[in-house]
Length: 180
Image 1 (cartoon, rainbow, N blue to C red):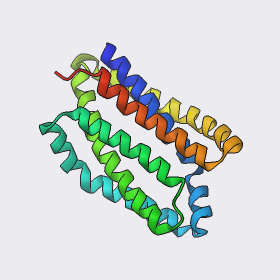
Image 2 (image 1 turned 90 degrees about the vertical axis):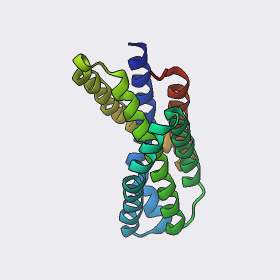
Image 3 (image 1 turned 45 degrees about the vertical axis):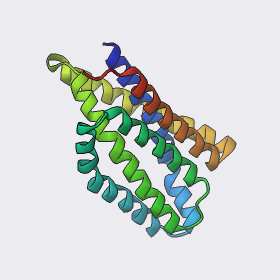
């Protein structure tokens, strides 16, 4: 059960980090480019990259140490959050979203694989439900936290907080999880 608690903590940190960006992402892009179509281009760049790289990086994580992929994914997500604070064009944003897609493709297959290994067959539905519940509730809390951070400190602080939470999640899971 300790490993499940670590997964819950990791899920919480991931959801806080990602959830902080959600409410203000479109505002950020609109201020950056003053073009609503850019939201679609950035969104497409991210999801296409995740879709293309996930099978390849997932297969690599099966052959190598999954913890390496968790660390790389978390570190890249942190870098992406920092880049959000310094980009000045749609082209830079699309490049950052491609990097974000690679970060997600590194992290998610390894994380899901570990989750499958750590849940028990008899309680898997409940354990996945618990992880989902933590994630969904945390996204709501993250939106509230993001509103406070954004209104008090602005976009740059929002990006830094988001990156720190994502990096912390990969550091915790890579240190606390024992592979079978």
